[in-house]
Amino acid sequence: MKSSRTCAADRSRRQHARKELMSKKRYAQVGLGGRSRMYLKGVVAGYAETSEMVALCDLNKGRLQLALENARSWGGDPKGYPARDFDRMIAETQPDTVIVTTKDCYHDDYIVRAMELGCDVITEKPMTTDAQKAQRIIDAQRETGQQCRVTFNYRYSPPRTQVKALLMTGVIGNILSLDFHWLLDIRHGADYFRRWHRNKENSGGLMVHKATHHFDLVNWWLSTVPEAVLAQGHRRFYTPQTADRYGLQERTERCLTCPETKCRFRLDIESIDGLKRLYRDNEVYDGYFRDRCVFSDLIDIEDTMNVLVNYANGTKMSYSLNAFMPWEGYIVSFNGTRGRLEHKTVESSYISADGSVPGQTLERGTYIRVIPHFGPAYDVDIWTSKGGHGGGDRHILEDLFGAAPPEDPYLRAADQRGGAYSILTGVAANQSMATGQLVRIDDLVQNIGMPDYPPMPTDNEPLSFEIPDPIHIEQPTS
Ligand SMILES: NC(=O)c1ccc[n+]([C@@H]2O[C@H](COP(=O)([O-])OP(=O)(O)OC[C@H]3O[C@@H](n4cnc5c(N)ncnc54)[C@H](O)[C@@H]3O)[C@@H](O)[C@H]2O)c1
Figure 1: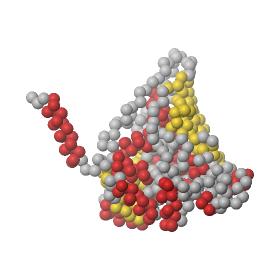
Figure 2: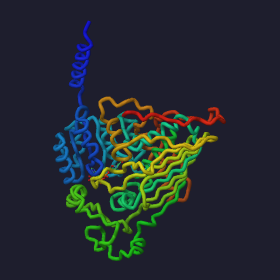
Figure 3: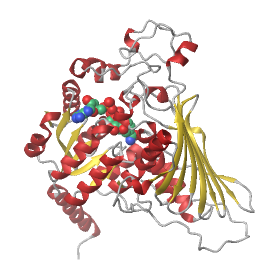
Figure 4: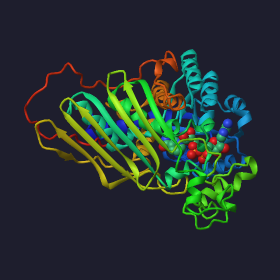
């Protein structure tokens, strides 16, 4: 009989041999701006044991070059391709999976083409920007049978996962309605009005580009999908009239050339190294200005939006998004048959790709409160989160690229079905804002299929007059 030491040595030899045998997954990435770095560094440096970045692709020659240099400095050696050579890139470098991090309006082109060429896809949110493009993706996925993963990092933020965990226990029963209010502040919120996001043809507006996160959270928190949407909205803060009221009479197209140096919305693109290297230094290739005036009359997205949603399980939501707030974060309240759960998060303020960690949860001001029927209200200990987007970024990277990601009772990994339903509330809201009519989701995209969500409490379960003990769920270690 072998000693325990010999057995352990055998096991470690076998594990080592298995690792050697395990072939790495090959990735190509298209779209190499601010968000791309998380995936590129993740694959090249963080998860080199399981993953290899074999190719990079962008419309902008300068950003392609910068990404290649970064990849090499992190130990990778991908090949670079211009966007027009996407097909050649796939043929020559044979990736298993294409990571799509371009401007939103081009996601569908790359998702569909990658699947047609036999690749799986990992795409950033929003999966796409309108109903026709969503239908294209749904159809192409069904025809090709390839996997299409949509990276909803917000689901992986520990406090948001904790809300899901609490709702699943039935602590407030089944949920009949919710109020959800998201606040974008005058730094991060204003930033959408400087960049390509300011036009609906690029981003679908904030109802799609930004609220896709929030509407996805609701679909997943409730394990249901939207059925009908009514919305109203306007842009009344980021306007020339507001600039006039601030006394900014001499505005120009962009901050770089603007004489209004007193403007508190001014972005000095040359003084922030990350922004200079990514955008300012590469304007020569595509003429894209990252610092356009937030008060321009060329903007066509809303800054103020109110939405009513009816869900397939009967839940009703009232939602708002305001992009000119003095603080950043959200307040959501779930109204259930056994009580109410209130959750507030305050996030750090930032400007996209300025080198800071984006959207960190701030401990002060963040809470989850349970208010049971017949019992006293209490706060639960918040699951801790570190890093970008409420701590979601590091957890989703592990789930995407880790050697053995743990089983997930919350089913946070989303595909094209969750991707489609997350944008369709916003697509319907855009339509409703334009027409004043109620918009039915079924009229927008067909044959999506029901996303995989965990089971939730239903209205068949018995209720009780007993005062429940405070609930505590241990934070998972990974
Ligand atoms: N999940 C999150 O928290 C999160 C955060 C930020 C951004 N995002 C998403 O990531 C994506 C990229 O956003 P970003 O902030 O990096 O924007 P960005 O403007 O910094 O980068 C976009 C990149 O795509 C390239 N590009 C544009 N059109 C292209 C085309 N047709 N073919 C190839 N390349 C093209 C641009 O040259 C640029 O390098 C967006 O879809 C955005 O919604 C997600």
